[in-house]
Length: 460
Ligand SMILES: [Zn+2]
Image (cartoon, rainbow, N blue to C red):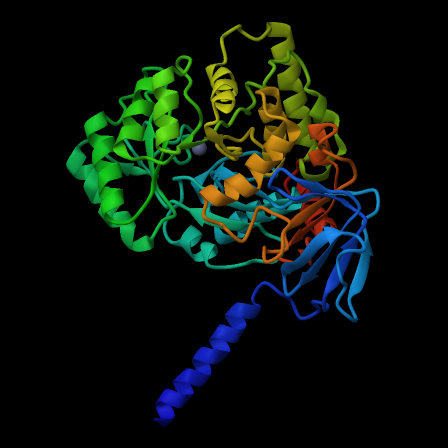
């Protein structure tokens, strides 16, 4: 009996500690944030708003004067600012990039570096992201259970499934997924994953322009079926329209990247709507500094935010790349993912924001998420629709129901902007402050850490 009591006591201590995890000792009582233009995340906005944050959550949100401030609440004046919900990025590959030097390597895949990436997301207003198929060992599963101050939350699919060599493109992690060459191996891989309870089973189906073998319909159908049997949803990296149709029929619920070999047809649109499929279009990348192919330096490259987190040597290197591309001229080629994003959006198929950072060294962590807003707007989203796709809708697909909106009961994750992104979507990069789980992210501290690393690593 005494032992039981002791156990209960320890358990209650543990519960108290877990419950208190996101807050820090100096957390003040309730705080009222007043005067901002609040973009709620559901398509609506509140002018001259007030909202109350208490115990890491929004407790009240409305027009100033209609929101009762709890007694003793401190006040923060946000007049002239715009607030959006903390962003949820539904496609990423953290861990391998040295964000200071731009080098990708397995040797970088440490807890410290992984957290650094989650801090870079937080710096840019990203409240949560998901690692889509390149996690080694237990690290990401452990981090998933934590709420680290000044860092985004992480979700993970663990290791994805791919035909050997046709998974993640970058050599640093090309061999990380389960190597699948038969339906039996596909089932076995899913059975091996299941005890970790990954957020999804991730399946790569991409021949990389015919250079690689890819999973056959028999193999990917076995993977999706086995996942369903074990209570796991599945998602796929796809390239070709016919594979996408097969994957929907196999029961995959979401796609990383859009269809890129041709325009989607009515049959795919019908299938996608019938099955309520979601897609992260991932329209960015070095080869397309913006969706409207620019020869030369994209406008965002000169924004102050870039200089805050990216080492001067990396910026110079990128500037040279843009200059070279300008001299060479970009080869003309139809951008089917952009065409399809527009077409699927018009048809009402769900599309949510995913950056695919750091799928290669050129997609700068955090910044790439914010650039994807521009790409989605260029592909037919209104700024308001892009914000919903990057907050409420992306939170929903990741089952992060506490995120994605400035609304009572939700986690107090929000970004304070100096200008309104409904006027110009580029204003999502005019970040004044970021709050995650009710705490202001220490952006000055993070900047100081990174800028010291530029010197240490010879990247000035
Ligand atoms: Zn990816």
